[in-house]
Amino acid sequence: MGLFDDKKEVSRKELRATLKRSSMTIPGTGGKKYTRRERAGFEKELFSSKYGSRISKRDYKSALESLRKSRFKSVPDEGKMRRRTTAEKRSIESKRRFMKNIGGL
Image 1: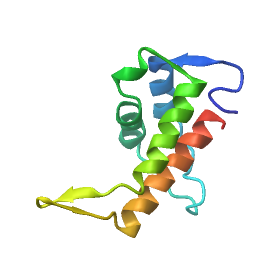
Image 2: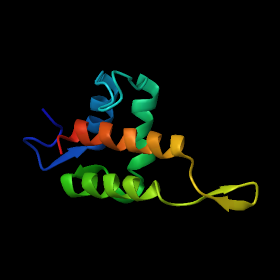
Image 3: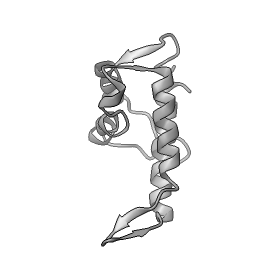
Image 4: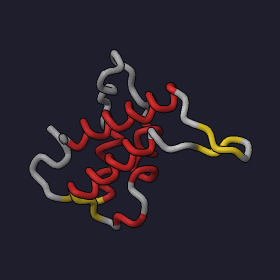
């Protein structure tokens, strides 16, 4: 059962509560789990203030898509730009799969 199975939008508070109480494993990692603090941080990290106080299914999909695209962006490192490492890309993809699972998408 996903967050958007029977609703078109959820409040930020409801999303945060769902992430905090979720004890789901990260799909495709063989049983690894995020800590409660990490899960709660996803709400602030992925859903900036531009989404407002209510997050629609469309907003949720948009945030997941921007997370997917971030795997391919370069990151600053000591004044230069560098490509993401494989471990960083894997971490981003795990986070995306977890959030996709929570949303029921």
